[in-house]
Length: 175
Image (cartoon, one colour):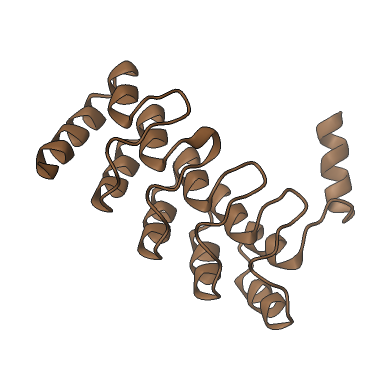
């Protein structure tokens, strides 16, 4: 019932966000470009404390991410919940967006919520494809989260052998 009420309110426009954010969420690139051309900033935070890049990264919209980065959206800005666009992409398993953000210069070591660096998050969640992308960007391998655990600690504890092997290879290459 609550979800139905929220969906109805959204359809009536009562829960709408900025035009840039709504266009990013729905991958309406023409509307995204038009809103930006009409003065809406890609840096502006919306009603949930997120920028359009945060929303596109969270919702898995690589076309919108590409357009926003091209328009100058900052890849390392934090959302109200502490996430960066990169930490959203890692958290939701959006490998293509992780690649886009890293290529655009996102800080591979900038922590998201709970001081969790992207590599630690990928290891904890068992996202081997994403940890490989992050490792290719040369992160600090000894970074820890708020619990004091490294990516290797999480990979071993959660029994993610592919990530353990990736991290061992990275550690050997760093020596």
